[in-house]
Image (tube, rainbow, N blue to C red; front, side):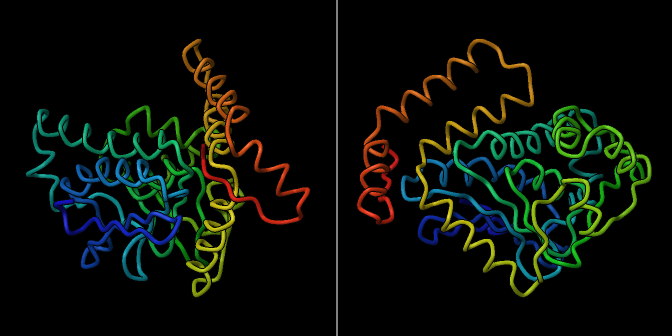
Length: 262
């Protein structure tokens, strides 16, 4: 992958995508947005990877938003703005539609585009002291429907309006209360918590998880015939798999199952 500010690491069944623009609290450049689809696709296609985890380099930020210093050059005209929006939309869309579970490991600042990236993940674990915000109203930005829909699906319309109207920062206690994050963990224990959770997910049947993700995501929309057919195929793949035979055998033999994802 060309952009040195996006780091891909494979650690057993966990595939890591690390945002590394530490001097700017991991603010997303145009090139970083553009590199996310390739990084996520590579991890999703790796048969050894069972779960993807996203984090920011260093201790101070997950992602502090878009790199504002680029706004004049990368977002200064309508054509440039369209290109920038397309890159950001593609990045969040591929995370949201990744067939494998995705988890955002959030600490420090999770602002604007950083919160959009975290919301695109299935799960969000946050360190104590993390700060959240979407400051679009302080910058005069319009927020596109796809990102707004993800926020409303998670926190509901009233809280989404508060987040946008006020453009204020809020803490982990409030984020947990509104369902924006799944867990709050002491800062020094966050990565261990994510790795432990990743190992737990990786031990389960991948085809079952993939089918569940399809169905749960569809439940937040009005799924059409194609989406329902895809869910049905995923369920049938579970029952036709070697894993479906392995599970009951392992249960009878009182041992952990060895799921292969096939």
